[in-house]
Image 1 (cartoon, rainbow, N blue to C red):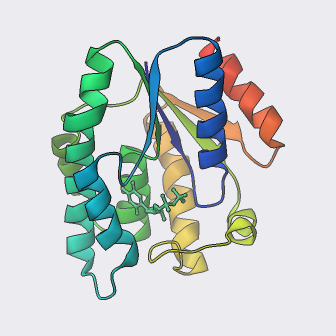
Image 2 (cartoon, helix red, strand yellow; image 1 turned 60 degrees about the horizontal axis):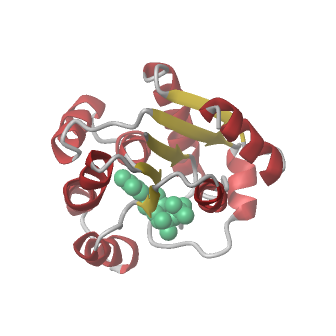
Amino acid sequence: MFISIEGIDGCGKTTLCNKLSEYLTKKNIDHIKTLEPGGTLIANQIREILLHSEGLDLKSEILLFLAARAQHVSELIKPALDEGKWVITDRYSDSFLAYQAYGRGFDFDFLNKLNNFACYNLYPDKTFYLKIDVKTSLARQTDPDRISSSDVDFYKRIKLGFDELSQKFSDRFEIIDATQSIEKVFQDILKELNI
Ligand code: TYD
């Protein structure tokens, strides 16, 4: 089972990934919990450049997110799935389309093709989109990085991106109202997973 958790900054993804991982451990479901950009040593090195370097060209940003994803899939996600483990990832391919295509304004189809290439055409069985409005997102952000410190219009485009992606890929997307309490959001996720 391959699960991604997606949404704009401040939607509670990381907390939910942790809760889900704890729950799977209790249920003796063998799994890994990971995140993007990152998940492996090389992908973490790329993450440092992505989130903390000044003067990064936007095309470099795109190529580095893809490089991190290719490394993450080939070194960690695919082997874990092959061993029969569940994989939970905090962000994946949809963040790329929402942030770099909708947010930054690069061509969707072109980035979608690059994404297919970088993730070896491996997509989640379920994508939980933790949906919040931009105002809540901005109010919840405490420690912005290079990308998340961008402006309100940027966030509005990303939010629209996730909304449209949830329609386009409705076979795997589950929209969760993430303005609810963490506990309620968590219960909604468990219900969808039937565990
Ligand atoms: P991170 O510190 O992991 O933030 P969060 O807790 O919000 O996930 O930083 C990841 C940042 O990178 C976040 O602002 C979203 C952005 N991002 C992209 O722009 N494109 C991508 O493909 C991915 C995976 C993340």
